[in-house]
Image 1 (tube, rainbow, N blue to C red):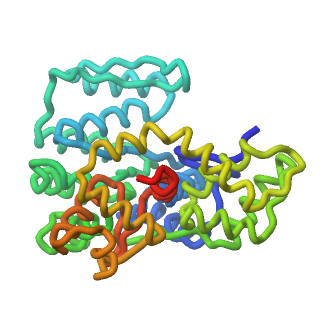
Image 2 (image 1 turned 90 degrees about the vertical axis):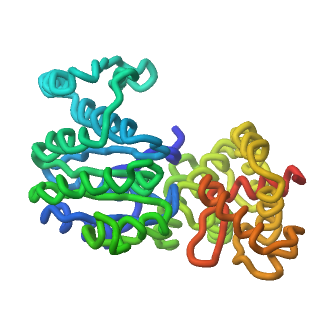
Length: 367
């Protein structure tokens, strides 16, 4: 059985390391604090929060994913759907369905996951004032940690200031509920929590989530391979970490590929890497082609230059020259747009690919 997990939350025996962060979150949860976590995508923020909640006796998480929300209606309905599916107890679900009857909710079972899927009437459009009544329901939950994932996307709302103000006014009244806000775009999370004009200014404690300790994670990865009779030596472990840019999610994607192209009894070496990358390219090819088709020529030139320079670079004179674009302002604009589209990630002056295998695919495809 495949021992690696990718594209999902990892808990229990599949969760690795982060003892310090888990202990800190345990304190925050027990004291009903507010905390915001920042780290790049697939670094493990959501899994960290949910694992911390799992380890608290009698505690549960209300998980609300705000990725790509466009309107206040999206925001409200994401919270409502999370409330309705919070637990499997039938009486609870009935109460929630009655509470939000005006939204004409429907609950069906997903045939693939056997989990409930909630639908709400698209013709009913919720307005900013609905935020308060919905959060009143959230505030009434017991022993529940409220998790807002990709929280920075709330800044995409036309009524962002109103939405944040209404959320803040209600959340500050929930003195027995811990709130965790996770985000992958540091600049936007800073705008929400450190800008003095923001309603959420200094309303939550910061927690940066970076790469896992390489020794701990290396031992974890090696142990997973050993369950299938595969041997990974130190040099190969370092190669796996480097190719995955020390991002746990990307490292596990590569490990899945290595597992699939190898057999029990194999000793994995660098000679397995090209086949593993080809395995990833085969799976991701359509998605990668879609990205290339949807970006501008200047954005493509920037991606090509970044991939050639090793997937990470500052906007130096050398980098600008390599793009072939005459104006620095044009390069800066193109890179900013790529960050907005979550193709690139930047921290300070350094830019890198959100998906390191996309960079490898660009070079492999000679694009």
